[in-house]
Length: 266
Image (cartoon, rainbow, N blue to C red; front, side):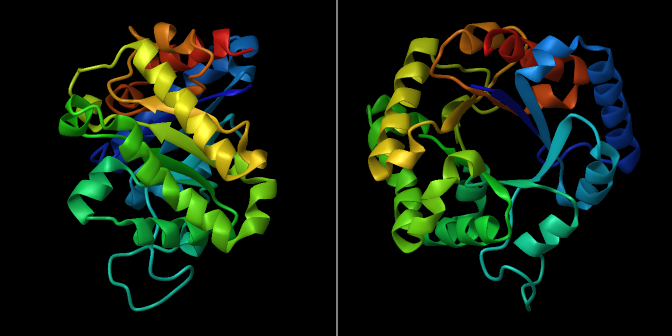
């Protein structure tokens, strides 16, 4: 299975100048890398919305895809929704994927099951791929509720398929799950590879139980992934890549993670 390494830039970098510098570093480094590793690892970056069009244009024709960090739940196209950006507008900006359900959106914007179901419906209708983020808080982890929390979050996909059964045919190619324990994001705390592997296996089995067409879904790990620990995650067959935060803001560390997955996930 092809590995995926996706950089979520969040609200970074601050300026267009810094964005261009990061892209220049990435593209220069990618062009220098030996192709066998890169061939097994698809790269993607998700810049902030203000930079999405410029980043998508810069990456056109390269080996790196661009993604949005979110889309509007209210309308797939246009409407009186100040501050929102629709799936159609994201597509027009040049992105081919979008992140949905990130824990920071769930926390700061109180995104609910119904909200995420609407967003996912809009994204797929616009032919955008979806990176769907799930994961438990520290309190839930300590209470050994991880799998129950994940089941509740994955119910968005179950309901999506109930409403749109025709999506099952190619959903495994248009949907990526990113398991990100909230307590590990940006904290330096990292679960063991065995814990992540067990959780990923549960995710894959749960999705396959929704529909047999989802028996080959891509599941990434995210949460303090860096160049030092990427090899250990990449060596596990249940971990299909990484959603990377802070380490994606430096070309060297981002591509070191990609190399770990690209060199092993043949």
